Amino acid sequence: MTKEEITIEDIPITLERKNIKNMYLRVLPPNGEVKVSAPLFLSYEDISEFIKSRKEWILKKQELILKNEIKAPFKYLNGEKHPLWGREYALQLIKNSTIKRVVVDKEKEILYLPVPNRSTIEKRERILNEFYRQELQNAIPPVLGRCSKIVGKQPKDIKVRKMKNWGNCKKDGRITLNLNLAKKDPICLEYVMIHELCHLIEFNHGKKFKKLMDKYCPNWKEIKKILNE
Image (cartoon, rainbow, N blue to C red; front, top):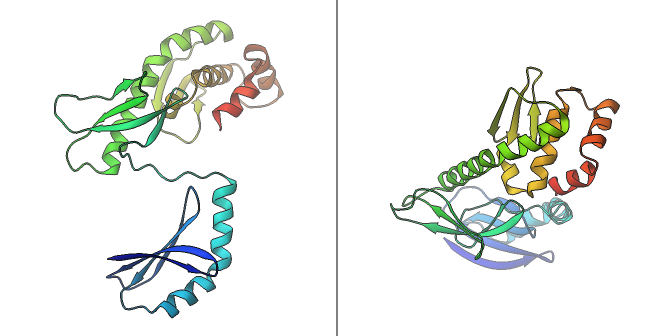
């Protein structure tokens, strides 16, 4: 494989020559970098024509990435920044058999992640997600105690899992919380907890529900913005 930097139609491009049959184009976050993978036999003229035909799409994709501040997917490498309770920590991989769990150094702002040799991105992600799950589970009891006193309701059960919503409440009184809440400022967990407990009184998001939120969590709109940043 060979790699070089070229410019076509004023668009900087990282061109990789590989032993492949087809050409591939990617526009990557966070800065809209353009990467092209092309077969070894393909001429510069063919590559240039391909880029020209896709120029409008490339520019729109770059604009979308920059406008929405889309971040590059995590690779779980040394130095990569990961959030924990509203703070950023640098990841430090540990490849040994003595440390079995993630260790947090708050003073140095480092997350030590124990990984097996030749671990995949998926394996590292699972280890870190399990850490977030445990962090959230440890934080739930005191937060639930405070919020239950505020709202006057107690759930039948609370579970933690990775999900699209920040929280979910079933009519039978079971609440599920997103493990990614462990990445956010602790005030966000209290907001979500009160939100789900209010659903034990009013199941929908209508006017009555919003009045409950105004009563039990007066600054809930501001916290919601922090949560969704």
